[in-house]
Structures are given as C-alpha cells and as structure tokens.
Amino acid sequence: MDDEIDTIAAQLGEDLINKILGNESIDVILSCLELEAPIWYQSAAEGISVLHAAAYTRNHDLVKLLIEKGAVWNAVDYLKNTAGDICLSYNDDAIYKEIRDAGIRSELLLGLLEKKPSSDPSALILRAEDITASGSSDAFLNSTLKYTVDETGQDICMLNVEGEDIGVMMGWERNIMDETVHRLCDRHPNAANLKVLNVGFGLGIIDSFFQNLAQPPAEHVIIEAHPDVLKFMREKGWYDRKGVRILEGRWQDFIEGPELLKSGGFDIVYTDTFSEDYGALRQFFEHLPDILADDESCFSFFNGLGATNAFFYDIYTRISEIHLADIGLEVTWADVDVSFDDKEGRWGETREYFSLPLYRLPIGKMKAIDFASWTTSMTIHSLYIYDRQAHCICVYYQDWHRTKRPKPAVEGGILPAVSQAVSAAQQTQNDNNSGLSSGFSSPRNTLSSSTGIVVAMNEGTTQLPNTPLLQPTGPAATLSTGLPFDEEAKLVYGVVISLRNMVRKLSGRDEQFVNYRTSAYKLHLFETITGYRFVMLSDSKTDSLRFVLRQIYVGPFLEYVVRNPLVKMDSREQGVDNEYFRASVDRLIRGLSVFL
Ligand SMILES: C[S@@+](CC[C@H](N)C(=O)[O-])C[C@H]1O[C@@H](n2cnc3c(N)ncnc32)[C@H](O)[C@@H]1O
Image (cartoon, rainbow, N blue to C red; front, side, top):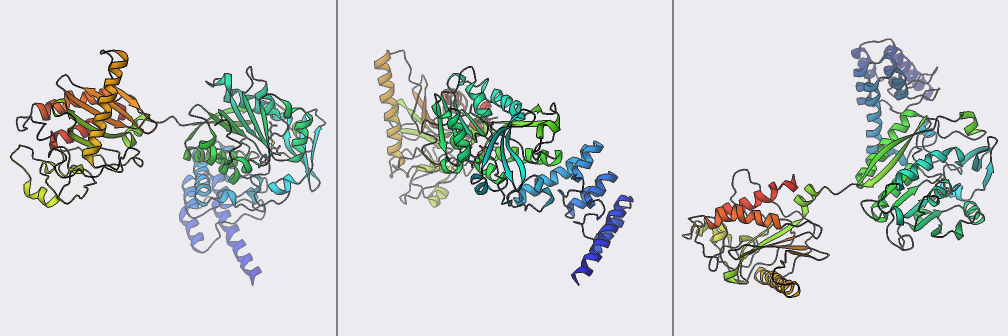
C-alpha cells in the first residue's frame, strides 16, 4: 500500500517538474498542486526539485508561488546544487534573492539550524546530529589528534573519522587569520594595551599573529578544550609566554565564571572551534555583550558554515549578521581571496570544507549608542524649578522617564500650581474646581486633596495640539527617594545649594557649579539672573543639559509664565504651572536637535 502511494506521489512529482520545465502556465502548475502533486519532490534522474525547475525556467512569479506553497528552499540535486546555485549560474539576482530570503526566513523562524539531521542533503553545512568526532563535541574531545605536515608542506591538525582524514585546522587558512588579526587590532584605540580572548587554539595560527603584533597583547587568554591540543601548546612553550593565560576546557565551562573576566572585559574576542554547530556559535554570540570591554571592542569568528556552497554560505553569513545585530553588534564584512591555492594541493587527502573563492570575514562591534533615541527614551528624568525668593520651595515639577514617581506631597506641603502628579490630588475636586480665578486653567492648579492618591500617569489631561505628552518609559528609576515630593524637592534644592556653595568656596566666586554626576544620575543646574533655578536630573551618561534648561527659560518660561497676563507671577504662593507652559516644555524636550 505504501509502495503504491509512493509510486503515485513520484508520478505526480515527475509530472509537476516536467510541466514546470516545459514552461506550462502558473494555472496549470496550480492545478497540479491542487491534485496533490508533492511540492517537496525531487526528480529521480537528477535530483532536481520543483524550485530547481522553476529556477531553470527563470520564472520569478512561479518561484514566488512555489515558495509560498512550501517548496523546499535548500533541496540539493545530485550535483550538490541548490535552486539558489542555479540562479547564481544564470546571474539572476532577483530570483536568487527570492530563494535566499525564503531560506533566511525559514532558518530564523523555525530555528532549524540546531535541528538539521545529517541525512538532510544540507548536512553539507551542519552536522548537528553527526555523532562522529567531526560533528559531536563530546566525540571530538575524546578523539586523538595528529599534528603533521602534509604532502604539500602545510601544517595540519588532523582527525581521522571512520577512515577519513579531516582537517581540524589547516595551514592554508593563514591568510584568513592574518587578515582577521589586522582588521581586529590595527586601528584599535587600545592597541598598546590589548586584552585578547581567543577560543580554540588549533595550530595556534591566529594566536601567533596576535603575539606578533608590533605591541603584543597585554593579556592574551586562550580557551582550549582538547587534551592533544593542550599538549601541543605545552610543547611549543605557549604556557610560558608572557601575558598568555590558558584556560583548559570548553568555552562553555568558563564563559560565565569569574576566571575569564579576572581582569575585566576584552578588547578583542575571536572564536573558531570545531565540531560545534551554528546553535553553539549563536550561544557564544549571546555572551558577547558581557565579555567585550566597551564600544571599541571587536569580535570575529571563523565564518565557515556552508562554505562548500555559495548559496548556503550566503544564507549563514546573513543569518549570523542578523543574530549579531539582535544582541547589539554591527558587522562589517571584508572579502579575503582564498582562491590562489591549487585546490588539490590545499586539501591533499583531507575532506574539503571550504571550496569558495572568497572568505567573508566578519568584524563585529557593539553598535554606538544612538544618542538621539537613547535620550528620548531614557535619559531625562525630571525637571524642578525653584524661585530664589521662595528658597527651597519648588515652584514647578515635571518628569519624563521616571518609572517611580515620588510619593505625593503631604497636604499643604507644596504650592498648588507645581504639578498635579505629585500633589495629593483628588480627581473629582479637580473637575469641580477647574478654571480657577488664579488664571490657571489646568486641572493641575486646583488641587486640595486629602486622599493621598498618586496620579501616576501623564500629567497632561489637556494638551496643546500636536504635543504628545511623554510617557514615563525609562528604566526602573534609580532616583526614586521613596520620599513624599515636598521632601524630595527640598533635598534636591539642598544638594544644589550645598554643592554650589562648596564650589564657590573651593574655587572662588566666579566658578559656576553646573552639574555633577553619580553612578546613578546626573544633576544639571541653570540659574537665571532673575533668581530662578532650573534643575534637571538625567541618566548619568547624558552630556550637559544646561543648554536645554536655558532654552526652557528663554522659551516657554518667559512666554507662558513671565509674560502671561493671566498668570499671577507669585511663585511664592502659587507655583508656576499652567497647561501651555507644561505642554511647551514637553514639546521643547522632544524637539531638541539631539533627539532627532
Ligand atoms: C579550527 S581550530 C582553531 C584554529 C585556530 N583559529 C588557529 O588559528 O589555528 C578549533 C579548535 O577549537 C578547539 N575546540 C573545539 N571545541 C571547543 C570548545 N567548546 N571550547 C574550546 N575549544 C574548543 C579544538 O580543540 C581546536 O583546537
């Protein structure tokens, strides 16, 4: 019965492929699929799939349709070509990208990278379930390695798997390693004092290039797991080299432990292991933000997945770029010409694992923080305005990226027109009292609550047109004092005045105190000649915001507070809040050029 089904499927499949090759219309192909012709079929004669057939006929619409219907993007024919390779041979970029993107989507979405069985034709890329020493880490680490010089004179670290010689590392890769070291180190700002981590010693080619830099690394950590490699390292004197620290074991054993980061993060990280699949490489990626020292640190890895096939190599190159981007690393790629060797000579008796003319060399760097988006989304915590006349009484308060507001002020603890969000407000009372005689039309001006309920969302219930109010979206506030607002405001004022006086005492009256920074926040101060003190708290890494405070003063403050005929300029009794001022400050913060 099963045989019968197989025969029918094969007939329908052969018929489908022949129709595609015969340039039948899309409708005809669709009706074959409706009659259950198997879209996964590969022809008996050449092993070509429906996607190969569509690529041969260069029918872009049909390729799209077949992909939509579930055609296998990575089927390999008997000549080990994929449909993508067929497109490459025709130089058909558009169809190539269609198939390549289907591959990337499928790999990303289904996470097939870790799961491909070795019987899959694409096992020429990954050997995740290969339990021989070339595909299984455990089997590899228990195997015997041989260091030798092959018939062409190149150094080889070799493994024999079921009678076949497999190069763990081969001398022809010197150029790749040389170029990698130069691209990683040459222009590094810390070149005179580099801290380098290399995972996987092999022949020690890359480690020798690191050591041969004009200024060898100040610290050079090598993680190596295989006992035979460690023996080789000992024989070659690597244990005695200055600045070299060898961690014996798998990188997985050290990556989260204290020993690796004994002297802090690394300027350069490189990894090139053996018998590990893409899933392991991706796991290594995930640790990079923790082990790279800073934004100048660089990372590279041996980019050899899929390198016996241009199409697969392209896909895995792009997937690694996407995954590195996910953890904040931006990759630039350089091509290294590896076509110069006579291929026969390069491989000798060993199994070929890189057959493309160009090696794509990745250099990953932590993406520079985009100051614009960073500041809009997380830096400015709060603004306080004080009037010298009113001493430590805050006359205005507004916050943006503070997830925890202070507790509301005790009743009578703050002036009525400071901020609704930190007053002991009672919404019903707000409604009843809106539009008070003071000239403040904002509901924020009508507070006299006794409930103590915190109004913890946007302050503006009324808004100027086109002025979205900022949400408190930042990280958990480091600034929350847990105090009621009136006490917090006094504390801020007290700190400002003490530091200001201290600066004057230490450096003379002309010296101005403009900001200070702790590990948790930065405080910025701007004083007007009329006696107002504008204080802003921000993330500790923010540049000076004094110019922002000045802009608030000369813009919204002068316009909506000082020159507003409806506002009684009595900040000692009232506070200065009004909806126009509040919305205008919001708009100004959001519209700052550094936020663009
Ligand atoms: C291809 S070789 C590295 C070659 C090296 N880049 C060079 O320039 O000579 C791979 C090395 O990684 C080591 N290795 C494999 N899996 C490892 C793991 N999980 N942790 C640390 N080293 C590993 C192997 O023993 C081998 O020495």
